[in-house]
Image (tube, rainbow, N blue to C red; front, side, top):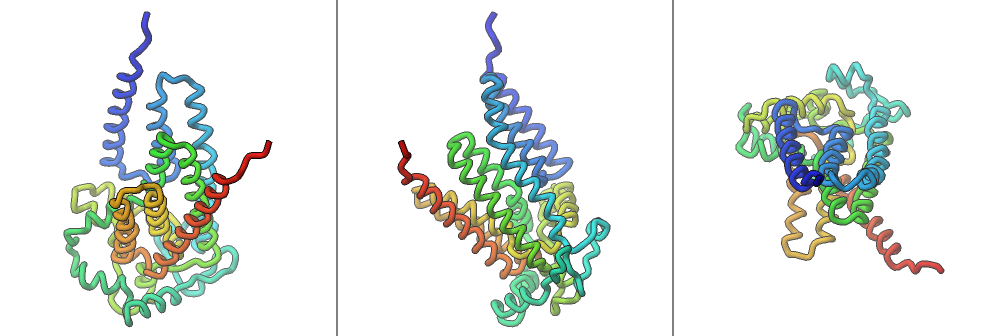
Length: 322
């Protein structure tokens, strides 16, 4: 008696996976938590291993679980960097005057405002963009693009990791190591330099001039994904609201662009640099980050890329001892 046709089984399983994922996104929103994204990635890759034995699946877990565990520790340790209590985060109440984190380090409010006002000649780029592009309550035509670019932050690292695990395991390990390094650098800075973003400085009265709205999730309403936008907005209130310096959204966009730019040879590889530019625009326009935060994110990512390139180059030229 012949066994199952595993190719057909895998095709059917992939179809069910896609249908289930689309339904989940439609009713519950795009998953942005680390555990959920890791489960999706491992589940997707597990389908491709159907019929290839338990040893192949254990190899998948061996590659993914250590990195996932480190990133989960990073996620759950971010609360230590926040100067606000759980009750304040749940209520969305974030005072800025006289606020210190667990290490006694003060919340930075004025410094990024001064930098951005210097860059834009008196106002901040966020206020200028919102005044010219978001007049009134109407969502502009590009609002959906802003929201999609913003939420891509949660997907670029795991999607890249899935692709590399399938195609090139050594590059997968390099990528995941860079992701962890960048996350740790960001968390360390959040602890040492808690910084209020534009939307918070505006509602607290620290940023004078035109009020700053938070527009990164409203674009989903434009395309009928109301649940997605609501879930994203809720998630924004449950994370550390003063993890602004550096912008890890821009940092990971830059990391992805630099990583793929260095691996591709086609002239089209230069298009990858449009991604961090689009992310920077979306965050500044959406009131999430100052340009100063974004420049810091670019700097952090470039450091990680250069160090990784140096280490990989040394490993490639190292002569094995006999």
